[in-house]
Length: 334
Ligand SMILES: Cc1cc2nc3c(=O)[nH]c(=O)nc-3n(C[C@H](O)[C@H](O)[C@H](O)COP(=O)(O)O)c2cc1C
Image 1: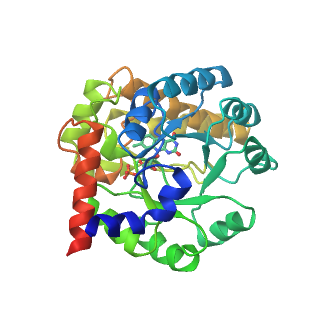
Image 2 (image 1 turned 30 degrees about the horizontal axis):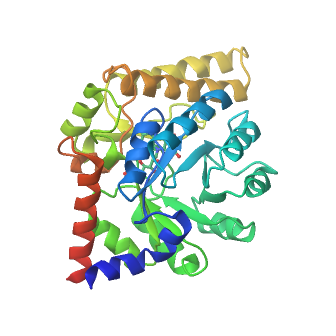
């Protein structure tokens, strides 16, 4: 009976995703590649490849390799400001990717139409109610609302507040997935009861056996507490950097230094604002790779959500998924 309650609350989500449960593993640059993505989808969830700064060729290979490992649906997360966005969409189209998740701001003109023309469903991040309504009008198929508890680039509002502001207004019109700070099934159950059709988790899956994250990265997660996952500080009012949540280390301090350095270049008129912001973004892309792949968790960026405190051990994706579902079912039964 409880099984069916969870399934029925997730029904619109599973119908949209084509998966058994409406638990998405949010794209995590460098972490969400063929192995983790296929494991998530094979375990009944919905894996999403993080395209990040990949070239169209690299994405092509990643999708092909993921398809070798799963016959279940999975998505591809594309960053809207990627300079080759349209080519990346075309690569997804060639592979008949079923779902594209657009992250990182307003989709550029023509991109939604281009995705639709490939036959893929499109899911967008809505950081505010007004934008969510706009997305519904423009025909997107699903919406993710992600609060500031999340790991990686974040918005300013907490998940609990976004959920209260957005779910009652639009959850009857479109499947909404709640992300940020979810580490246990009880939280999944509560967002479903508020009208969400599913959830998206990131940090909870980083230490899966199937995740290729470096053992040092996983150790940092297992050791980390919620309070260690801090937001990057903006040092110059002219340099509006998108805040990033990561475990505090030398790298977070280095970021402050990098901003000062870029601000000086701006002062000296040596670079334009666009170039300044690009340098900041490149800093993060490089720093995340350093930590995830090379295992340098001191100088690299250990992006992590506050839910990192609920990551206690390395487990298989199937076991993580099983715990989440059992906890959600138990909560719904109470
Ligand atoms: C290491 C790391 C890298 C991430 N990279 C991306 C990314 O490339 N694109 C994106 O849309 N979200 C990214 N995210 C956000 C996740 O997809 C997800 O929404 C978030 O982790 C959810 O919050 P949680 O970690 O509290 O579960 C990243 C998160 C982490 C922890």
